[in-house]
Length: 396
Length: 60
Image (tube, rainbow over all chains, first blue to last red; front, side, top):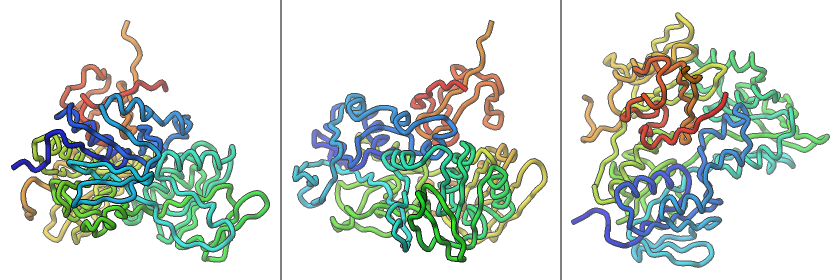
C-alpha cells in the first residue's frame, strides 16, 4: 500500500514560505497532475528569507526582495494559492481544513509548513508594543518603514539574526546597539575566542554592545524610543528590533491533536502522528531535531516532494555548516548535531579563529571558523558524521 | 575578447558566486564561468542543485 494517498486527492500545503513553496516545487518534479492548494496568511510572494538580514547592503527595498508574486507562483506550480487566508482548524479524521473565512478544503495529504513565531520577552513601558520582530517580508517592510535615514536601531538578542542585522545596519550607516544577557555574541554557537573576534569586528563597524544585561522597558520620549536596560542605563533609538529567538509554530497541529514537542513531531519521512499529515521546516521536529536553517529545510522539501509524488523517501542530513552573514567578520559554524558532550580546541593562528569541537572519544563533532579561516569549511566537514543518516541512529 | 567576470546570486539563500574568485575550497578554480560549473554542483549554503539554482546575475 502506498504511503501517500496519491491519486487525484489534493495536496494542501499550509504556509508559503521557503518550506511550503519548495515542497510544492519538488512535488511538481514528480507529479504535475495532482491538485495542489497552498494556503498562506501573507500575500504569497516568493522571497528569500535569508536575504532579509542583508538587504540594506545590497541596496534592496523590501519590495525588491519579492521575486515572484502569488499569481506567478500559482502559474509556475499549477497550484491554487489562497492568500491572506489563515487555516482555522484541521480535522485529521475527516481530512479537511477549514479556513478563517469558513471555507472547507478536503485533502489527500496535508503539509504543515507553518514556520516559526518570534519569541517575545515581556517588556514594561508605553512603547513595548512598538518593538518589531522580523520573521516575514511583511515584518521587514514594517521595519524599514519605521526606520528613518541614519536612524538608530536597538537590537535585542546577540544571536545569529541579531548579529546579521547589526552588521547590515551598521554597514549602511545606522548607529546600532545590541543588547543581550550573554557575555558574547553567538555564545551558544561559538567558542569564546571566535565570539570575541565577531564582537570586536562589529564594534569597529560602529556597533555598541550592551552585553550581560537585558531590556527591561521601552518608552516613548522626544520623538524616539527610550529603552531602559536592567543594568540601569538607557539607550535612545528610532526602532527597537527583537531578535531573541524563534519558536516552532505548532498551534494548528496541537489544536488538531497531533503530537507536538518543541516542534511538530515527525519521523524521518516527515510523517506527523496523524495519517496523511506531514510537516517540515521551522515548525517541525525531525527525529528530535529542530533545525531552523535553510539547508535542512531544503533536504526535507526534496524528500517530502518525492514521497508525495509516489516515491517514499526518508530525510538524510549530512553535516550542514551555517554561514553567518556578517561580512565584517565572516563566520561559519557547524554545531554538534545531535548535541554531544565535548570540548572546544581553539587555534587562533592565521587570519582567523578555528575552533574544533571534539567529543569524549576525540572525534570531531563540530567546528567554528572566523575570518579567512572559513576557507577550511569544506575540508573539515568531510570529517563530521552525518547528522541524520538513512539508517537507525548509531555511534558509527 | 573575454567579457568581464560576473557574480551570480542564489535566490534561495542569497549566496553569491563570484566567477573571478571561484570556490577553490570546493574544487572550482578562480575564473570558472557559471556555465562551466558541473551540473551536479550544489549551492554550498543551501544545498540547492545547480539545475534548480535559479541564479540571478547581479551587478556589483
